[in-house]
Image (tube, rainbow, N blue to C red):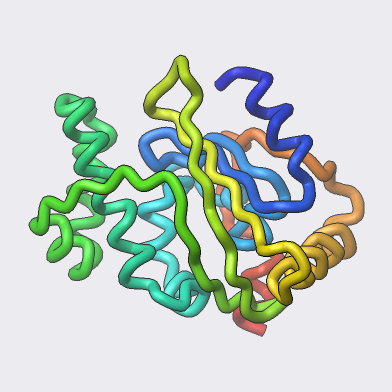
Length: 201
């Protein structure tokens, strides 16, 4: 991934921003980790949006409309497989999720293809409450597989105030961690998200 894309994430400290490639989490800023989970603390294999949405039980509470949110990566996988039919990692991901989740297996047979670039989602966040966030998706011109996803709130809305509150919580919970994006650490073995403590405590 280009260093310039990391710099983009570093400059977006007030909103959640993620960069994915074939649904693998390539990078994310602290706000993205606070909204979702600490992807950097997961084993390499688990840093994937499809695995996260289908295999982390917390997502079914986080997303107000979990089925719609979950169908999105299924449809994206159809696009990715069409582009890369011989990719063994995609085949392994689809096979594993088909074995482990009934919803994924059922929706996979629908052959829905989705390549949406924007939308709105409601989150029930365990720290700051409800957030209605707009998402915008961009693709670098030189890599059709990489996706930059940004989440924003309407100016002056309760959700914008919620994002500000989330940014304060992130700073207070991680005073010694840099505010920008973090490249995934290959040696991380145990989930360590501070959010998980809030969700289960």
